[in-house]
Amino acid sequence: MPSAPRLKIGLSACFQHADTSRPLFTGKTLQYVEQSIAHWLMSAGAMVVMVPCPTGETARGDVTLDHYAEWLDGIVMHGGADVWPGNYGEEPLREEWVGDRVRDLYDLAVVKAFAQVGKPIFGVCRGLQLINVAFGGALYQDLQTQHPGAQEHRNATTYDQHFHDIHIVPDTHLATLYPKQLRARVNSIHHQGIKRVAPDFVVEALSEPDGVPEAIRLQPAPGRGYIAATQWHPEFHKVGSDTLDDTAILSDFLAACEQAKANPRSVQHAASSSLRGRATRLLRHALSRQRT
Image (cartoon, rainbow, N blue to C red; front, side, top):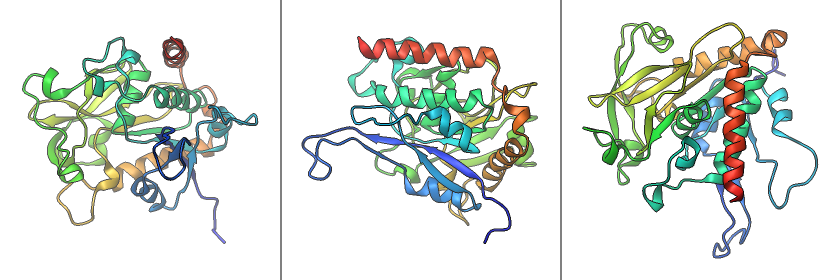
């Protein structure tokens, strides 16, 4: 028997939408997690729970995302599809950059549910982009064509073996996790990126040499919870490789979850009304656009 209750960490779902041509689960919507990110969280002893979307054609019962946010100790927002440009006030420049509007609605609702009860939120890749958009930021739909001087941030052939360097911004929380290591190497598996950082967030790392934000964090203030994200996948780091060791990032997130768990009364109103209001308005806007 464990000596103490383990942390229960939520992991947002990835979607495979209903497909009548698929030989297995024909015409059924699939929700799943990528194995390595679940194992990453489990490596530190946390219990991982996928948070399924509670709505859809097959929905039954009264379980909501708010129930998951109250029960779990924190949430990790998964990587995956592009964010729909309509969520930050733009039209898709190409058909292949439309993203997944259905998943956006789900992810926005997950972030809102966990933020409003002060549970720690950590985003990976798409998760960073979604968090940035949820709180008022905007994205480049495609770095290669929209960001002057952008290096290659995604290579479909090498995928998780594609890397670039980052600069960790001094005097940020991320810099305290990696003292004396202001430069590092990370994987890079994205073609979209932050164009405008959300209000109340700070950039903690930038890609080199083109200066694309690679890590963001909600600025600490009374009543605010822990929200942080990286554009790279820390769970893809392999022991002994020359990429940034993920241990400090994972330990920091889980420590925040432990603290929130130990002090539930102090985090009941951790999401400020302004942050909560922005996420709510964006979700309402996205829902209205989805119906049109």
